[in-house]
Amino acid sequence: MSAFKHKRDRGSLFKNDKKDIETHPDFKGSADIGGEEYYVSMWISAEDSKTEFSLGFTKKQDKPYKAESDAKRDIRQSEPASVQAEIDDDSEIPF
Image 1 (tube, rainbow, N blue to C red):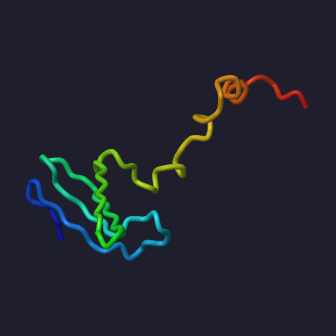
Image 2 (cartoon, rainbow, N blue to C red):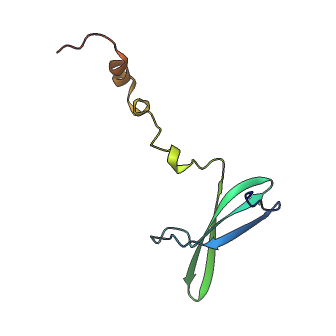
Image 3 (spheres, rainbow, N blue to C red):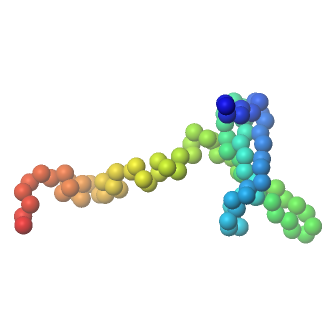
């Protein structure tokens, strides 16, 4: 089965059943905007008997896949250069 592809300049939103905290979006989905694929998030707020819809867009290629975030990162990348030099030093261990 192939993945659903939106027509150009169209998108869809679905209720976010995994909303655990107030800052998570109420609805999530995707859209094709100008030929680029985007994730879409929507929050609903009601004040003074008016309903407000706020939207957020994130390019699909710009958002990193969660499994690749910290799990595959080399710990030495976050160390300062001086510490890296000590790690890479192949001299004898003093003890």
